Length: 383
Picture 1 (spheres, helix red, strand yellow):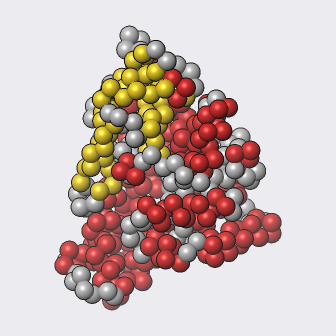
Picture 2 (tube, rainbow, N blue to C red; picture 1 turned 90 degrees about the horizontal axis):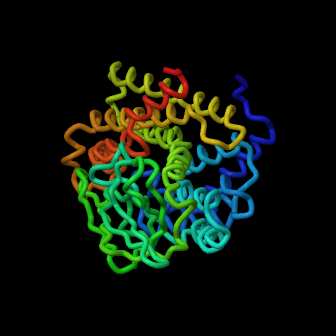
Picture 3 (cartoon, rainbow, N blue to C red; picture 1 turned 120 degrees about the horizontal axis):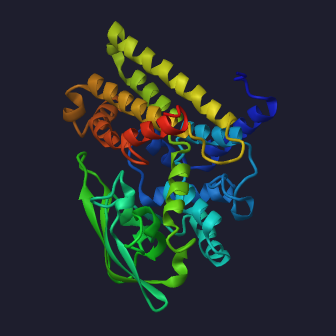
């Protein structure tokens, strides 16, 4: 296959590099490059800068802020944004509910929600998973019962990432309990300031607060906040999850993490076994990058390609493998590095254990890797 960019695409890539490194403040990019947690304000500021440049939601319809790019140009955007350390636009807005509203929403919903969603004037949360409905999402039990023009919602969602920042939540609810479970689900847009909505934090194994429970107790939702057809939520969910998996092979970010590992490993690089592990990871990342390019080449209709499951599966495995090697090399320093030691090596070592622990989730979210293997077997291998 031809791996060299055309002059036009090379110019496009260079223009992105210049914009990403000159428009987004260095402080924000350093936070990403050094593996530290972004604040809510940093995420909002970065996305608003990108949106002003027309770079926040390039995959949306042009009338709502998208760009008429080729699939390769979209791929280059994704790779270069990671390379520069620019925060990727908030996935719940840019890759999930935005495309859903653009595709399934009413004209009124599009006009009301799409501009503030692109600009992160609304911070969206995702209300899908429940305690007994994770990979088996169709088993969800949060209910919505019609009462006049409104819906009354009761139930619980869990693992709501960054829900503590949410303004609105797009929520799958059961609107018909009498039919096949996939057929009785709808999607509602719920203002998180509505009485009866409660967000409860879940502390993670790395000590962070990234996910939450969201409880709904007799929450009244106006009828015009139903997205798509009544009981059509399962179709919407599949559309959303297909989009979510596109771009989930974070080759650029994983290559950056591996480069940081090499820069901070010091004398450990003299160990031939360490060098062999690094070489194997670099080879696997190159293979993943080439696979991503093949997927791009066969996604000309803009629809999620079945091979996106391959990218999700292998991409998350390599993310975890790099974090595991970083933890091995940091050793006891990953737990005992002094807080007053502000050297780059100490900072890298301190982040090794939390990063390793946090990335255990990567093979679960967006559809667990076991689910991805089933998708691959059915849609690619025909088993």
